[in-house]
Length: 593
Image (cartoon, rainbow, N blue to C red):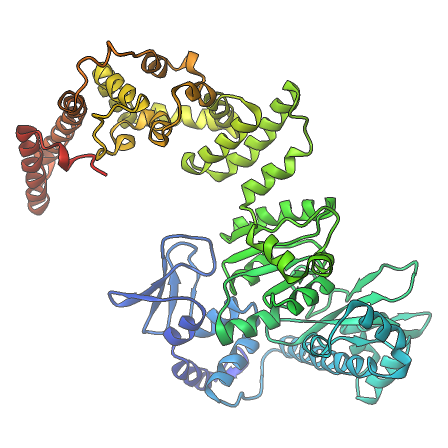
């Protein structure tokens, strides 16, 4: 009996010897709860664990619905095909892999892939040997100019193509056909003759995460009408949008000692220079274009990525695009800002390791970088420039998705433009239909209506509390969580707790349209004549008591309709607690920090 090209009983033994919990545990952190192991799913972005692994040999994600056995997990996580996943697991437990037998088309595809990988392995090693020949003086001079060490040449397997046919003749002697050379992207044909597509170039082999050579990036060493860099064309093993230069070295480091983050630069030279300076987890995508596939592969190695693209217009564009892609994958992104017109290699030559280290240490969160990069496009000395800058900055801020994340950036925009916070917040809500969404939320939210109704009945108490906070009165009870007590006024409370000057409220808010704030700022000594700790706490209690009575009414109604005995007992306990609090005015049990 056969299954996917291998005997079913052999696959069963393979899976028995490769315990699924142990194997998946090498890739992601598993935590046992009940009869299963749980983790955040590695196949989609989530913060609450929904990915499960059972001792029965299966995994399942309640979020994205991915499921399977240990082989399919390795296949998906390592982005490899079924035979490759089988080979990895067999190697892990020392099992010999039987002959692959499946449909002719599947077998042929596997055989073609294996021959291409074998040819590329021969090719990169031969290019390596060429680099040390006297005919490779151009390449050797360039290497000296760049300051590459022997260790770097060995780590990155740099090589040299001697000419248009030398590699072809070598590969023919190794038993490879012209078709196989073309399948590997090493050779091309013109007018019935074959030539090395990377002729007379410095060769940078590209390795996948399994340390297999899948293609090349080659640099011209003389001025030419051709592109300075040339990459292998798409093949069965090389897809430009999927490969990452240096990923094999980073993976090896992770397996040996673990890594904190990955640094992405633009080119192979920059990667080598960064490794020389000690930044061993630096990689580069093919060109400046980071793809979704790149992001998925890199996330498997680290959830923390630092973008360190060149300080030119193209680098800025690539950074902005990469930020969006990485954030969609749930990666923690930071941006190391290089001096204008400089690349990492140039910074290292001019400022040494300390210079680039300082830049990486001061890397910016994405929104800080995006706002900062927009500054040079507007004249903030003019009203028009301030308005247009604010509009663009708010578009970046709107992607943060929560008021707590947005507010610090609104403060920054306010400081740069002097536009009141309230005005910026209103404009932010208008972006991409947020105003409509908020209106619908308010229309649907009965809780919000209750809050507004309740607070309107306590206007005097609310005004006294807010006024005392704003004017920093000594009788203010410092143990109360005022944002939780008065959520509608959390923005005012935030500034009050920061201790800003009373006059500064006009910088942060559109006071004229905020009647409550306007009334609070107008309060004077007469308004605080009753001011003491006891009266202040009575104002707080008047708000708390109304909330408790509303909660009491809801629980009472729920008690009447519930038919579950255990639930009724729980509700009764809650009601007893509320009743006691109302009798004794136990303020300390509610809204305390």
